[in-house]
Image (cartoon, rainbow, N blue to C red; front, side, top):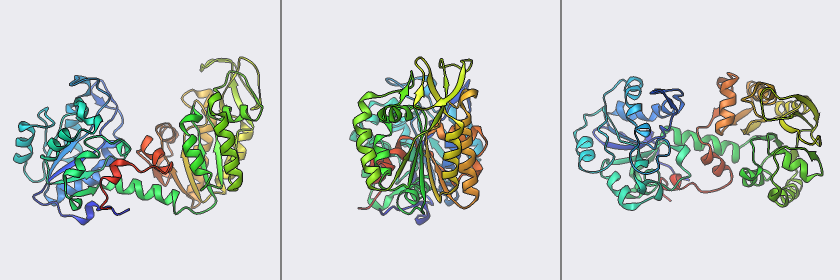
Length: 399
């Protein structure tokens, strides 16, 4: 894959149309998590330092049809000006004469923040007319929104084709995400351990299938574990169960065995008699969950087994928590895994954590500085590891 990156270009005097992911949580007018803004700063700073004129576009939330005040990017303007220490212009337009005039009138080193691209129906449809109007705002296109690279939207994909190949560029974050994902997928050291959790096995089937061909160990946790356990004849009470996934699980087990990949399930579970922080709680074997009880975390024996495997690993991919870590009684499995991944990293293992809940868990337990790489991509990262070609990345290549 040949990608042109921002280090290859001097942006002096150029109008740069930059796609970022500023889809950040805002509560009562304040940004509660600036991770995505901070992730875009290296690219923003490079363009501004070169003396480029920066036109930034992003989606924000999921507006249903047209303008909605709560999804306006004007809420980002003040903070963006503070962190970039430059002038940020905002006039509520995304395309058209007013947007073109504002982009043309920019001074070098200034920013023009466009209004939410998703206020336009053409954005999510990848509409060519909408994309062409966006393209008129810049001389060069940069995509730094890895988290949206799996969407063939107008601002992430279609717009790129209105620029010559040498003027379609990957931003610093995009470059870093691809490089680190490829390190795990293609250039990993063994033993390679994947830790997969979350609620639904159906969301991870394609990922698990791909990883059985790469990983030495796949540690399964979260609600998805109980469909695996049921497939082996276990009693899982009221735990999450997806009957329709059983045939695929059987196929995955065969592939894993053929590839000498160990699929490891939690031998014990923390169970509760209701989905509540105040429920009655006990520890049982995962295959012996009583009727009307549900598994909500991996148990102490599972934590011990998983920890030993993690500490022996040279490469780790973690996607999905081990239990309902938002509730104190069911956070211990995820907390222990997070600590062991951090410890393995300190011992020289390369660790990549991706997916919103896993990243939230690492931050909750204040271990983000001890992980090799934390991905900003949820669905995009999953699809990358599933072996899919992401349209937002394909649009940047010269191939």
